[in-house]
Amino acid sequence: MHITLRDISKKFKSNIVFKNLNIDIQSDSIYCLLGSNGAGKSTIINLLANLTEPEEGAILIDGKTFAKHELSLKKTIGLQSQYNQLIEELNAYDYLHFVGLLYGMRETELHSQIQNLFDYFFDDKEKLKKSIKTFSSGMKKKISICAALVNKPQLLLLDEPFANLDPSACARLCSLIKKYRTNNRIILISSHDLLYVDQIATNIGILEQGELVFNDTLDIFKNNSKNDLGTSLLKYLSPKAENNIALDKII
Ligand SMILES: Nc1ncnc2c1ncn2[C@@H]1O[C@H](COP(=O)(O)OP(=O)(O)OP(=O)(O)O)[C@@H](O)[C@H]1O
Image (cartoon, rainbow, N blue to C red; front, side):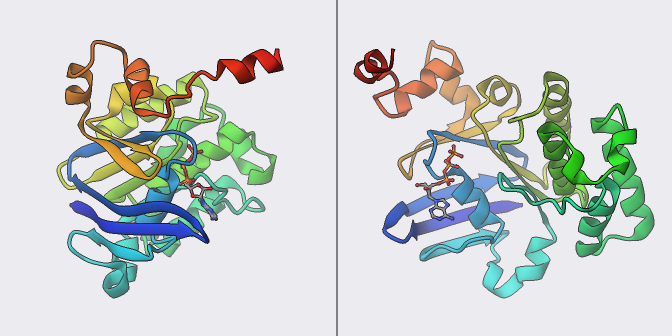
């Protein structure tokens, strides 16, 4: 698998998010998108999931565009969105079953995949029988991640997957992501959780004000710097990481 964002321009009304953005991602990558709030990480994920479209440029998945191959491409993608994608009136099983049917999965395969996901992520499965609206935010996040994995997609898109998860769930997710990586899959993750990014990323892209200011392997990023990932990342982000004048006024 291979994904390309070529000369992408994207704006929301007068807010220009990207101008001529180019990214290429190859199979076998765990590509982590980093950057400040509002830099455009979720927008890239939403473009790749075809939830929004660019004003200019092309999005190619294995050389194909959504315009010509919408359904077949969407079947290869699993998405955990930052926005609520759940149908909260349903219980966890029925929701994942519904998602699997949308992907055209066969009943037996779908049933066993849902059970496997529940076994992996949930120690207390009794609560899963209730409607999703009664779940904690971390449980909802785990169900969204399960939904992204239900059809074992070739392109796995995870938008802030670690936010709201407890340390045990984060550790399980890290193990899963590392094992999920194969030579015909791409895992694209937006995250601010550098501890986990450091554990799982093969490649990182740093977005700052709509520009891809770094795009290479995690090893190269770390070898270029003598600092930890967080300190190194701050160099690429807005210079006002500490705004002491405002801070003094607040205190
Ligand atoms: N649906 C929308 N309507 C209007 N503006 C939007 C919409 N979605 C995103 N934007 C704008 O696009 C820009 C990029 O937002 P995006 O959510 O992609 O950033 P992000 O890097 O994911 O941020 P965060 O780290 O806070 O999640 C921001 O300026 C945001 O205000």
